[in-house]
Length: 259
Image 1 (cartoon, rainbow, N blue to C red):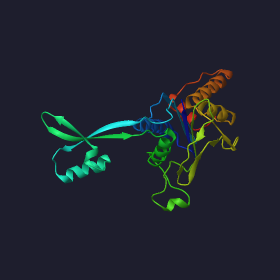
Image 2: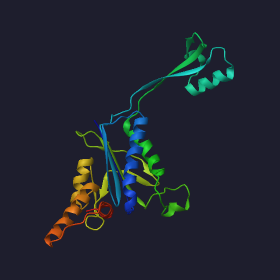
Image 3: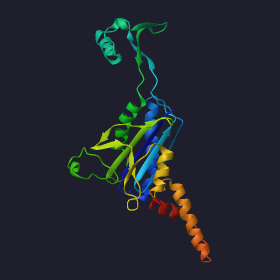
Image 4: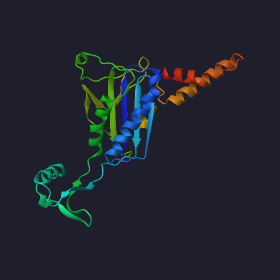
């Protein structure tokens, strides 16, 4: 089944905001997908000082067709009520509705509305820009020429690129095309700002993590913290000391570096 990979690359995200931002992105995207009928098998986020990335796997190629029964006014109701029902149900004539009988409430009109499913990439291209624009950063900013408009994008720090791909494991994933304030989605990202600033293409989460590691970025925050603590213990041991571990400090340090 197809997977979604989404990355939002920006200038530095404050350490205290990273975990909440990753959690919000995961919830916002998966909730929106489910609301559109696109159920999934699992989701994972990673976050570094400059990026938030989300992988959603086990998505369908398209949302399912939906059959909905919409109850309308009683038979013999005023014309205004009937016309309002026809408009809301998308019917051209009351003859297209069926009549449902109820021993207590009498006969009433019912419209059967069939909504065909949509390709999942179309759903993603619709929901992701909305989520980006409405992202609830504790503090955010506008930047560049577009910042003169109050309708321009706000982000925690200037947003630089959007990576968004979709496809099954057996095929080359495709870019889901959309744009947010002139930033077009693509399939490329960048590594460490100084040690590997060149762009490179990625396919899905496993490929993404491997290539970032080669570009001096450890994207998984727990793995970064594990390595930092391991190095600290080794340095202390070499000097005959014992590390006094501080979970809060370890989280802050690992959130302030990419490798």
